[in-house]
Length: 167
Image (cartoon, rainbow, N blue to C red; front, side, top):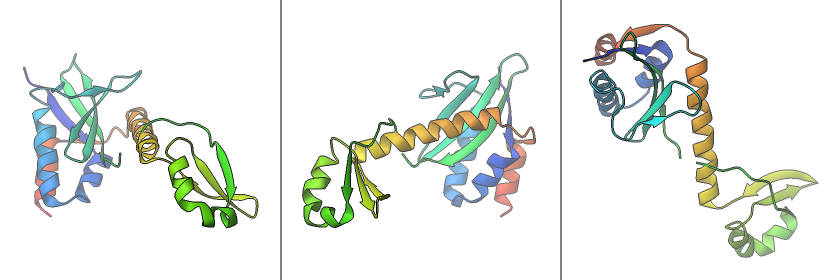
């Protein structure tokens, strides 16, 4: 049994900015949701009827209404990578950091280092692992928000493909 696939206008506009080859892969993956709305690797968004799949370096966020058999894509975004949030552990004046850069980079692997200029935060040093965790958490929040802030303006995946091919 197949589902009808709709794409919100905001998701279609986002896709228009992507390279043609990526748009083709995305539209193929979105179209496939009609046959299998919960494919292998799908992630259910916490606390809502939203789902996310990854298509290369992109995330496709959508909802499923099983009663009327419709999949609605609410967001398509480039994946930037990230995941946990914790407090800043150390504040260092930039003038002091200049002579200790290698040491501070090592310390930033286990705790954040806040570089201060005239008593104000100027930069943060953190491990790549922590940076990736923060980005992932932000992406998850944006994905959940896109489900809540739906525009309601959609078009079928066939129309989206035709519009993207016309460019």
